[in-house]
Amino acid sequence: MMQTYIIRRLLLIVPTVFIVTVIVFFSVRLIPGDVVDMMVMGMARGAGVEDPRELIRAKLGLDQPLVAQYVTWVTGVLGGDLGDALVSRESVTNLVLNRLPVSLEVGALAILISLAIALPVGIYSGIRPDTVGDYLLRSFSILLITVPGFWIALMVWVYPALWWGWAPPMIYTRFSMNPIRNLTSLIIPASILGMWLSGVTMRLTRTMMLEVLRQDYVRTAWSKGLQEPVVVVRHVLRNAMLPVVTMIGLMLPVMVGGAVIVETLFQLPGLGSLLVFAIERRDYIVVSGINLVVAGFVLIVNLLIDLTYSFLDPRIRYD
Image (cartoon, rainbow, N blue to C red; front, side, top):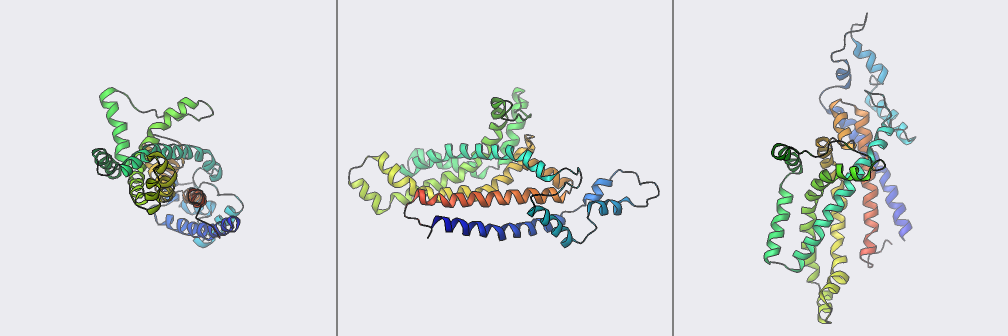
């Protein structure tokens, strides 16, 4: 039953998210440095106060044991409150909600670009193996896999400015204000992420196409005299897409890491740049809140991807 499967998966998300909160909340404290040291750096000592650090720790609740801090934070999370940033005292929930749309835009656009590149190339290489075009396209996919995305971003950012006096737009415009300028500010960073992701997807699509083309039912379809487009679309493509769809779901956490670099380089106000800023300031609450939201998002998306399997292959059942 589909409903039973969905309920089971949703229930499994609860312990997974709990483990994520424990790992993130405590591991982020292992980062060298301390938020209080950052806050008092350059600050003159208060009148009559020998060391303001203890006062700041008490005000922020950092004087409590880590377990007590964790319980306080999780209690707020269960109530829909991710806490307040230690430095700016802004609501982490508001910070995440303001920046989440930017990261979602970049991620969605990057996935669309990667699929637009990878699927046609992978399908062509699969149905025309060991041809000149196949060798060239396979070499291109290997190049996309091996070249780091941050290096491509730096090259795009630096060399056009040196050679032609042009630099990518560094001012983000919201879609609701100006859709054209919004797309202009996102297309380059999204293309960099998309090209990096397309290399892996391209190789996997080709491999799966070759494997499915060797199946007996595909040979039967050929023997019936069906045209190549019919065989590829109806009998090969849907079955070959199952591992590709899975790969896209597995690449989401990796794309978040790539978005951190791209958003920082192109000054996009997304979760990635906020995460870097929070780590620099040792703002544990912001770091924990962002990681919790990203983990929840990845789990939900992977559930949706699992549900698409029955659409791609009707033989799959969720009993």
